[in-house]
Image 1 (cartoon, rainbow over the protein chains, first blue to last red):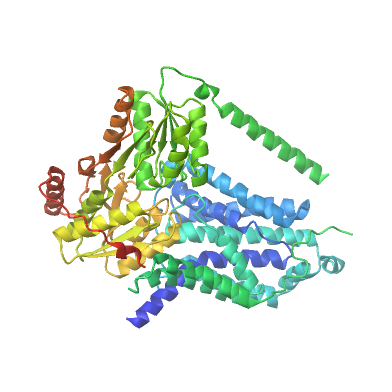
Image 2 (spheres, each protein chain N blue to C red; image 1 turned 90 degrees about the horizontal axis):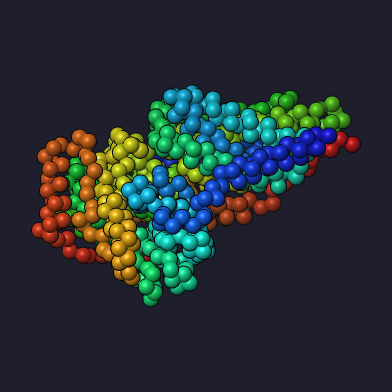
Amino acid sequence: MIESWWVDLLLAALRAATPLIFCALGILVAERAGVLHIGVEGVMLAGALAAIIGTVLGGNPWAGMLATIAAGIIAGIILAFISVSLPTNQVVIGIAFNLVSLGVTSFLFRLLAKQLQVLVPAIPPLLFGLSPFALAAIVLIVVMWWFLFWTGPGLKLRSVGENTHAAHASGINVVYVRFAALIIASVLAALGGAALTMGWVRSFTDNVTLGRGFIALAAVYFGRWNPLLALSACLIFGAGEALAFRGQGTGAGLNPHYYLMLPYILTLLVVGLAGMARGPGDAGKPYLRR
Amino acid sequence: MLRKWFVSIVVFLVMTMLGLALVGFDGKQLEAAPSKVRVGAIYSIANPERAGGWDRAQFAGLQILTKEYGWEVSIAESVPFPKLAEIASGYADKGFEIVVFTSSGHYDGLAEAAPKYPKTNFLMMSVASKLPEVPNVAAFSPDMYIYGALVGITAAKASKSGVIGVVGGVPIPALKLMFSGIIEGARSVRPKVDVIVSWVGDWVDLAKHREVTLLQARKGADVFFTVTGPGTMGVYEAVESAKGLVIGYAADWHSDAPKAVLTSVLVDVRKMYKEMADAFLAKTLHRKITKIDASYFKLADFRGKVSAGVEKDIQDTINKIQRGEITIPVKMHPDIVGK
């Protein structure tokens, strides 16, 4: 019984962590290239809606995946154009993008509400009852870690994030790297949205992401821009959420809000205990060729 | 150069959107139309047509005013509680004859706006235990306890495991009342039934709603009920995944999750809104709380989810309650929200 309780808790934590992992990976790629990805919440939301629209209108999950990737690419191009090519303040544009995305997705959802207010078909689990999204997230974490720390292109990406001018002097096209990084980051964040709507709750509602993009941001900072540590942070946040609901069923008779506040206190403690994390040297700084 | 192009495109887009907004703004709606009664309805949630059960039912009621009475209905969505009085005053300023508040939590907004506009009728179309001391207010207040009892009876008779899962958004008084009714209704027909009540802590997070429901299913619940906001679909997803059955709240939820919806305990909003409209036309819409009792509640089609015998048994019991042949004792369960 105890064993099944723990297994159940772990699976619930992984379910809750899966969308966060995709987003955290997206943030990692962008910030390792020196671009703050504050707009991750908005991209996630766009991906979440695109997944449901694609699945419902296309009639199968593959159409949903294609729509998600397309939404991620479009969002990435918009963000990259404004924050890298122009360039503009990355924090401000990220916040603005989140607000625009909330408005646009709610508007589109309203237009298609009659078709979209359904449960899309469930994607069959692959292993241990885990969705393909969860397994893909774990594989991607390892791949990202290997890419960032063991490959040449990964080194180039990191060097752009650490010192743009030094990277430029060594022959790296900084604008190109940042542009590409932001598109990849946005596709990953959009997949995080799809993991939430298509792979977990099978439907969409206004603002369905509810700040999960920002939690992923906290996970990356806690994980000191390292994919493996970010994974552990996502799992801690997921476990906190899973524990909150299980706490209600302990029979202790405490007010449910007592348990529901636990994940937030846990987040505060974890981030507080993590101490000052030093990010990539040039993260957030617009690149202007000297 | 790039920046100039970008600024030009942004200016063009903003102007186009403003133009579209102005074209879409139908000035006629705000002109006085003496033959048409104008109703302003206020929701604090988005997309009420497809949101939680009560909002959905209210939306259907408002449609009756448009379709059957030819009235003009304007809906304000996502209105935060501190802005309720301001939005209601806006409707009254523009000459709307009726302002409808759709949630019991809107009471303060109603109480603030109503005394300032004596020519406008301010209506609470939700649970109300009191009204401000002004003549231009009224309420149509559903008896949440008896509604809950009907849900409890239906769930207890349909459940094979004898465990019922009940998921609430936030423990507001109306839900505590209703969920107590569910427990007593279920126990009245199946004394050893186990009713698990869980609270999600918000009305909207689909994922949290799903996980809470799944947890109840793991504890053996096979029939579920939820009252929440847009998070409802999270509950339905979990019920479908766990191969359980869910009873829809207030409106018919069958089309949202055909495999999972057992039935819905409907609120006869048509009757409710017609009574309101007729009272308004007859100028008898006075300061009064009209109780929406068991006669306003009915079951939607079961669509073969239980055997004909069980369905008949449920329907017969509910008919007896509506005729007053069976009474459910009122007993509150404060323990459902803990200490």
